Image 1 (cartoon, rainbow, N blue to C red):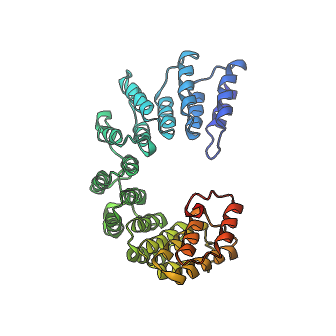
Image 2: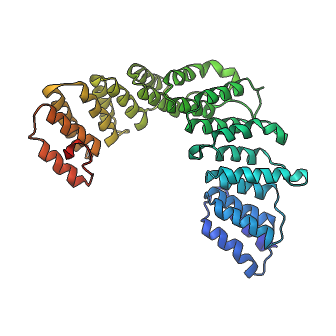
Image 3: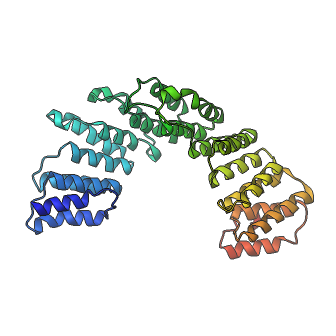
Length: 377
């Protein structure tokens, strides 16, 4: 019995990532060692499999536990299996397990918030089952459960990937009117998920509105909830998608005033917004800010975004800017990507300045990038 306890502790140790193969080997080797595994061991093992997104192995282990070991699944083992299926985005399996738990005799097997929230998450992402996520969310009362912040956030995230921004806004609205409590209050994750949904839906106007409304909802959100770096990153990216360069720069400035250090995503999105709006001066200005920062080195994507701004220029001015940016990249030991080379070659062709083209194509070939753009023609 002491040995089983030690194995259970080892499997369920916080902060330690267990190799899923080792977990299965441990469970299989118990019988060989003359030990009879119990529900605690299986619960710990299934928890490890869930963390490793090994949903097939989790289902197999649950089945083996029931058939080969004669152990009756309980709430913990079933919830862990639902979580494993959720992390593998296997929403059909998650919902099937949830239904089986609900139909099981006895109140001890009725799904809890952990299992239901995991099932909602399973319907998000690339699973494209956002409608099922909302169905499970709105059916929480059928399990005699109250929606928590995690429930709302999981449902919003399910809407995010399918660009169902109206539903995401409605969920956030419902969360904001919830009675204040530890388990059901909007937090920065709630706002970030909704802003991200608006970004993917190209609703930059609503992304800005949510960022603007966050301080005004101080009495309806968790204490200490303020916009963080991800909030600004996502909102600036939304402005980039909508070619709203003015708002992008304003948010970039606001983030600095809020003492939030801009990261690579923030600057790249702001530069991209200016490029899409043909504001090449602003793009170059932001790029110069970027390159002068020791803590924030530029990336090839940074320069690609700035190169896009050159399209608003004509004649030799465009070519000069492009070649200068390429030289800056070389100074920073950065290799342009294929799109960057494409824009450089196109700029030279537009001005009939073909002398730099052979050198650009040689660099493209040396970099190992496929000449799949205009550089091929």
